[in-house]
Image (cartoon, rainbow, N blue to C red; front, side, top):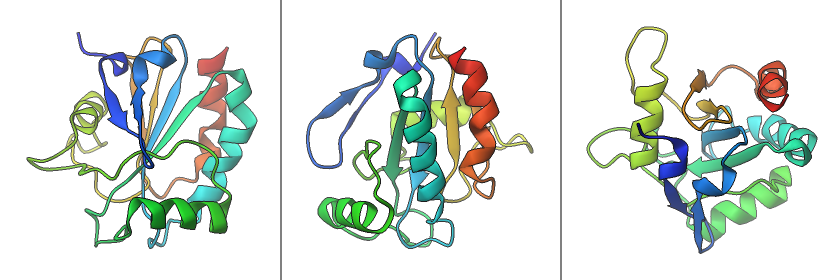
Length: 160
């Protein structure tokens, strides 16, 4: 059975993140974009990170330019924007494709593990939130319009 721990990903500004490093911890993965109407969700994501990282929550933002080309910048551009506009301190990963033939394998797994309410698996927009439990197997998908802070009770359950 495939788990989160079977994956790794390039970090935005170099290096590789092995998700096996988060064995036994819940992890939140979000596809992000700098020029989206939902970009202010970075504030809520950063608040979750600040509140729960000390308790063991892992969190990763994956920039994606696949939705209306709303993440066109370079890795440096993305990092500077996130820091200067939203003081993002949670880890940002390299830019990825989320859907289609070139989809990152992690996102192919996440999409299959947590389909949309209508049964489809494609990510429909920026700021899809995938929360993976401590076992690395159970994935909950939270749709883009939902504010990150609505996830606090679920995160708290997973941390307990």
